[in-house]
Image (cartoon, rainbow, N blue to C red; front, side, top):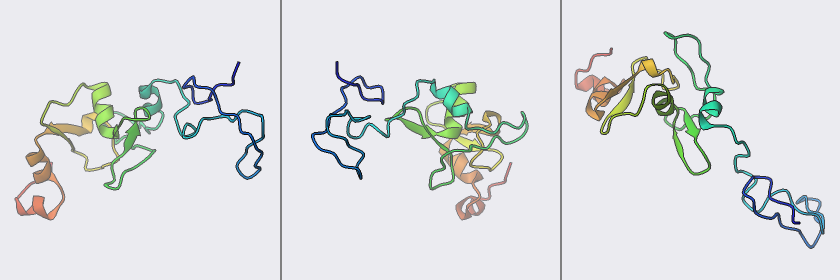
Length: 146
């Protein structure tokens, strides 16, 4: 019986025909992973369990900072699986409150982009979200901060 890839895909692991110390190959011994499978998530835990392990919950009123990957805009990002990613604050909102209504965006009332506390998030239209932003555009539109 062939040795299976350790990513959990169920496919047989390849067996190299030659040895290479620098590449970790030994002739005749199966590799741990198929090509490209080493970066796959090897965990079977639910996405919500993995998500909340990366949040620093301080209390109901305080910000809950996301402690994992941050995108170029300063927002937390979360990999649901190997093919689906979403913003961390959106995942938290949908997990604890429910789906975000169509056509609305989540505005951080606390102005902390890394905060995933769903009670700090307000579903608003993109126009309102932009007006509330701390940008020159928001200031020029006469927006007031909440």
